[in-house]
Image (tube, rainbow, N blue to C red; front, side, top):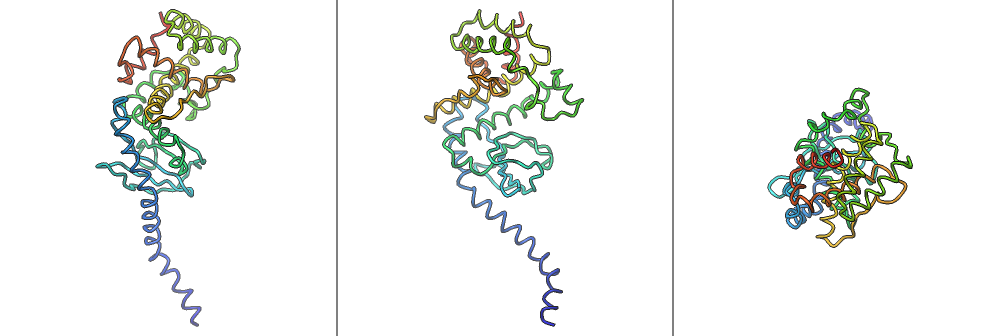
Length: 285
């Protein structure tokens, strides 16, 4: 009889304890990451002079145990704003900037916990903050001008930025882009102009749009990432420069392209939209 009464009581007990358990989990998460998230503000004080975009920090979504823990910055502190199941199956090592549909489409830096223990982990967080800033400052409008984007949306291809079938291994492309990387490093303006004209002639309209889009979007984040690395005494990120070429090659190409433009037009990178159009101008004459 006693066991029967206990079993009958369980359905009443569990709902009563459920919110307590949930609150306890949230409290544990908030305490667990408080010091790590506070370091973001410490680093921002050192990094913000690099570029206006670094004057603002963004929400950080930490994905652990198939759960999103979203922390929102306010008054110099990150506070837990939302806990939600991970329906995206975020994999360990993820570093991304994503508008979260379950959070009214708000943009956040999405990471997994090990980022806080890596030597350059915080640099990658700020790299993703650059993407958050791009999203909030004109990226959706700029994308609407791209035929490659419109075609992807018509096909419901929401992963186009990661999976577009660019001809990375086509010898004519690898030869030209490799030469362009070298010319950018040598500040050879005439050669850069000529090579970009040749690239535009070689590629289809959508391929050219994809290349220039990635050079701007990922190139700016890599450019600022490397400037942050210099401030923090970390090695430069040159990923993507060597063969075989891939989407990451445009991170490095964009980084070098922005450095090249900055030398001729100091401050051009401070305005993201102006930078986008300036990058598209080279090779169009």
